[in-house]
Length: 467
Image (cartoon, rainbow, N blue to C red; front, side, top):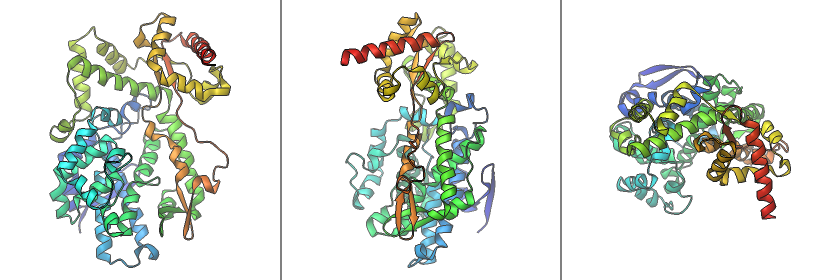
């Protein structure tokens, strides 16, 4: 079968069979992803962070294909399956890998907060996907169920797949419901028939060691220029294996590479996603969206606009720009000017070390962080009044993508013979605690120390009153 090549800066040439290019890649819904940035507004901090969901999808496809073919070469995994059967599983995985982010709205994770998850679940019920999950024996209505734990962009992605690609997938010999299940982290075939090949393939795309994470971690490090990651990709791919009754795991023979991957993921989170200016740039963009909705009484991001209008980052930003011009004295106009001119405030601390040095309650940092974030709106108003500033000049925020936090790394399964242990159980990191998000406080230049002093005094007063 003939194929086409895409030159990717991370994985080199990515070969995609022409029927898949024709039916999936060269379609408006897939091409829309060229204009949806992977890291939203992070390009205002790392100028090279202009990579899009489009090349990420191709990267996930490339990794998924390589991992599954490595699994196919392992006799224990392939035992009992015909080549035709494994071809079907591989085709399903490749299509799901390409389409896994097709529902990402403009501005990526920031935009999906404007999607109605309940309405999307209703659409999936009407399309028969909910019924297909129920027929497979999955409890869909319970907390933590397939449709409850899914993010809005995953739900919308399934809507797009069933509406735009169902016939194309069937032409490729793939079940569109199974593709949607992979996107949500399940396999209907595995649940119905106990077919472990489908089950493991679904984990390749959606699990603590999925290729989605592997691609965006490598890609984000490379494209931002942060270069905090050094992973032997070939050895990492060769480390994937399937353990009976445990599923997908990484073989312990690659512990050194796994260690680099884990350390790099933590570093990428801390110095890119959790970079204090990245946090501000992205929450500023979030505020722009919210102000636009309030001022213009219009939502620039809806499921229908993604489905039928193929809206992207450029559309959303143009609607915001036009509204800012129409209302030059509005908060929206002020925020838009900040964004366009990159007029950023000062952060009271830039990282965890600076945070610890700035806060008096070093013996109870967790309580101080909870106090800041749980009552952020009231504290912003209080701090603004104390500093004689407009309230919109004071911001208390944390990372804009909390789901990017590296905590679940502790659950990564490491295989040894016929059993698995988590990274935490292997002692790979000893007693090292994984870093989590810290809150940031942003104030105009020159107000940093006054803000820190006031917050320390206010926390001491609040703690004293509760004692």
